Image 1 (tube, rainbow, N blue to C red):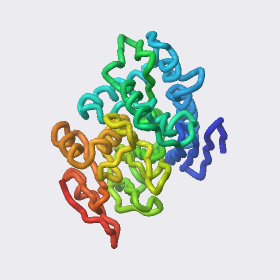
Image 2: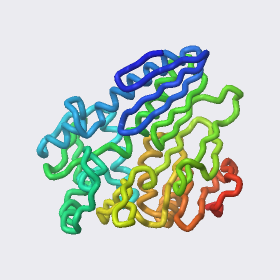
Image 3: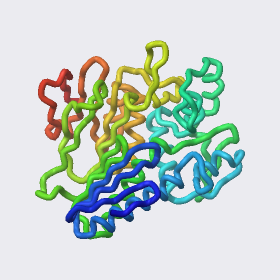
Image 4: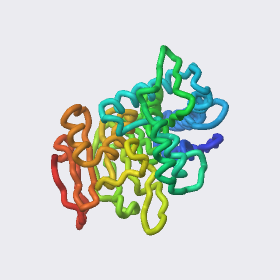
Length: 327
């Protein structure tokens, strides 16, 4: 066993399990192979490094440096730059449904910065909406600046980027297979011991202790976004942590969750949030326009919408109350 600052690695035979709490979520990485212990230890150290680098606070954080620079350009790492570049692309394609400058609103609702949950006034939301605009992010080489009244967060990209990095890392070790689970982000590496595909469960947003079905995949990322994990209730109403950049309020559009399946963990992370904000019709339109991924949408009226590319790989749970639709 090895204990890092935020993680523990335990080996049993050729399998090592890494557990950690970082990026505000619980993480589990299971690695199989001759070098599983060494690979898992390196993975834990990389997670700790990225947790500091992508945090909204801390002296070693690119994001903290950007947010406190009062509009001045800041030199940032290539890791941070790649996330922000990918974010801006998805922001443009989704009409701003995905926007990493939504941080002031997330903070106002109590979903960031350790603030207490609260419902901001309409006036406060209106004022904060003026500070949300991804197009005002300025990039020149490895420097980045934002207006002094804006803030950014990589909360919707860091886990996806990290899982991609872990897949690349495992390629340097004698590792046969691995499952990376970072909160709602799952990514696979290599194969199962028997050579069959990985079976990934899709959580039921109405009952997170259960799942609606499973999808069989090879080496890929499966990332889910929804407002059923982080939320608070007030006056009999639930307020989730994903904020609509257009309204300043938590998303309530008939979607309970959006799952994206594609090779890139970073892209899956961006897209799952974007599609959840866009809603059913917007998500379908995005899929038809850009493609390059598959998705599973779960709606509040009891439907599961699966794209045709993975329809044959999705297995509905027995006695499921949901109606399956193929798009």
